[in-house]
Amino acid sequence: MEGLRAAGMALATVNSALLVVLLTVWLRNYRKFRSTMVLGLVGFSAVLLLENLIAVFFFFRSMSMLYSSDPLVGEIVVGMRLLELLAIAFLTYVTLQ
Image (tube, rainbow, N blue to C red; front, side):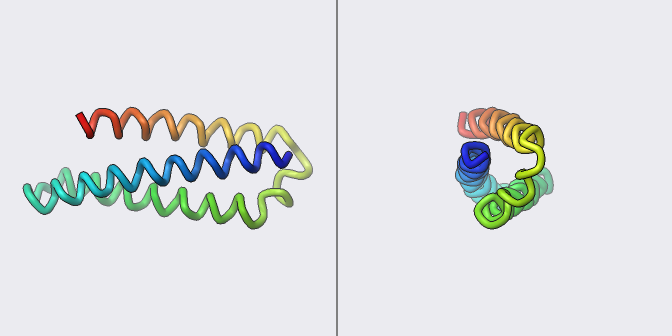
């Protein structure tokens, strides 16, 4: 159970780091182009970053209580974090190209 918590926290932390990179690039682009599309990307990355930071806090504080009754739930949450990481990694790669 502790391994799932650590994995979930690590994935949410990596997601947050990639989202900071995206937010930085998109903020710079918004200042340059003033496009509403880029502003939408800034908003998207800011909200997703907030969600991941809350997840890190949640994993750190109370995840052991929530998942102690059913390890399958912990595995599903880690799997969802992994899918989110893949999506953010693809988006980061394309943005930096």
